[in-house]
Amino acid sequence: MLEAAARLIADRGVSQVSLPMIYREAGVTKGAGQHAFAVKEDLLHAIVWEGFSMDAAQLGTPRLQAIADAAIVLSWLTVFSPVVRAAARIATEQDYPETFGALWRLYVPVVTDILAEAQREGELLEYLGDANRGQLEEVAWHLVMTFTGWDRKCRLTVDEMPARIASMNRLAYRGVATPEAYEQMNFDVQRGLSLIAESEWARGYITDVDQARADSALGETPA
Image (tube, rainbow, N blue to C red; front, side, top):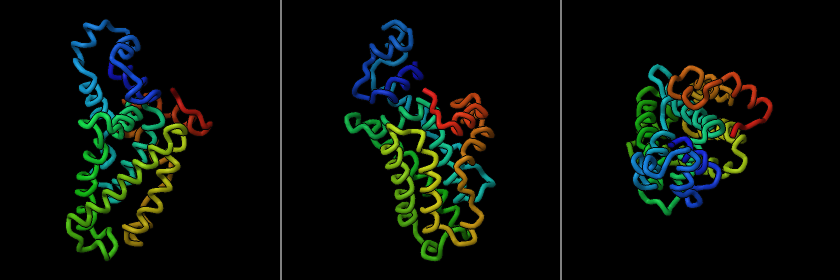
């Protein structure tokens, strides 16, 4: 039922989708549907938690690269996964305060932590070399909200998202990374699909990564 709800919400938006519509899309009875999710807000919460992850921020990857990787992976999943697209719509829907802002509430603390690790590793420019947590959090907010802005802009042209985020990464990290750290970073838009192929979690959203690569080359976006 989660996938059925996500398909509808990704296509129509949160306010235009009702529980009866979701039950019909999922092919379940009202009783079975209410047993799984008693109210719409419970279902929205489940989609948000399913759709957002920092899976790409692996240990052993340079810290700034890990943040950039997480963004490019999420951008590709936005193209190919209704659950991820629905999660982004839910997280920016102000009529549902429990889930509104979930994207930045989840990601800003995690990105701040990774920036602190990058600071310790000497990856940050001198002006951030002795920044306190509050100052690093400002950088995290900038990265997360720039991603959020591109997500909203690309709602009707979702296939643009990976290229936009790759460009965002290239520009954003010039103001964060030392020249040496920046030179080592990989901003290739196709890197996201390679990371997905290596991630058991991400492959759950794209079952055929090779087909996804072919579709992206042709400019096609699966429903």
